Picture 1 (cartoon, helix red, strand yellow):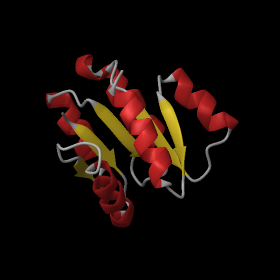
Picture 2: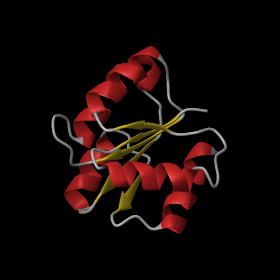
Picture 3: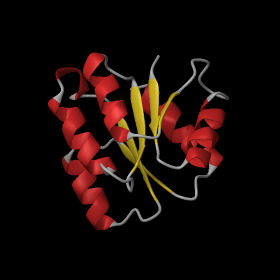
Picture 4: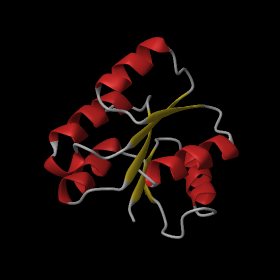
Length: 121
């Protein structure tokens, strides 16, 4: 099982990875650089991607757009995380096949519920 967490904030990476270990025995793969995560995805398909929207270099939506262009990335469920999940972000995300959205600050119960739901798909 390969769950990718992509966030440029080391605290968020650590927090989400820690929380996921309570429901998923396989460790999450942490990436602070979305381009490095994309390179990883080019070689193999993750089972789930959790990605922050606002990062330097490549935002979450741009990452998802590139992920969808990879043969193994077309159907990967993505949980898009942002401090400002508004109608515009939802619309753009849904057009790229985002499976679900999570608002910051991250609430443990909400994160775990969404991750479990997406891993059961």
